[in-house]
Length: 168
Image (cartoon, rainbow, N blue to C red; front, side, top):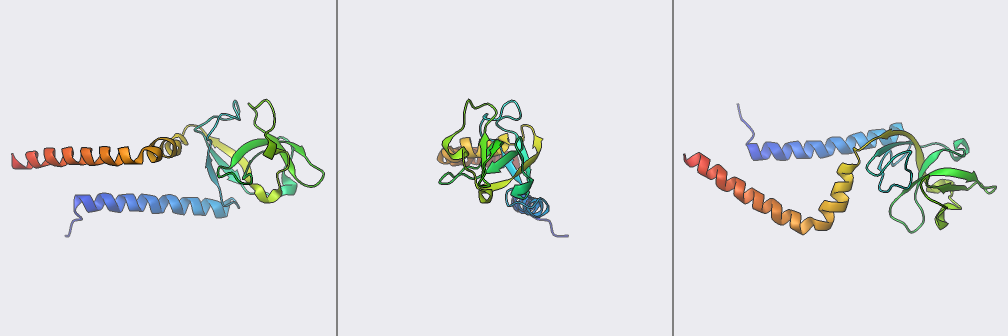
């Protein structure tokens, strides 16, 4: 029987993991009616409801089903990161106003949120798991050159140790 070499089996496992994660996310997007079913919290603006590093599960709901007190994720204009805040007011023109539970006041872009900007309503909070995503985006990616150099160094040391063990 043909065995997959160890280095190839690791690569197959990594690729399988990526494909599985993407498939789960796409399945949740369809099941929960939102293109953004899972969000990692990136700030403490909603403490004590949830904290930085928590994961939120969203459900896409029609704007007419949203009410004051609901926590929504929305994409402000000209801002790359979605915002997770509580609805504090329904405007007469069909837009929404939000504010973070821990914030002393509203931010400028929170006074008129259009239904098209809303990604979904928070339906579940999973504590701490979002730290994995935050570690990658806040530590690994900004220091990618250092990470590559360290990984190459570790690989070289591992190969050297492995070679010495094979010669014994």
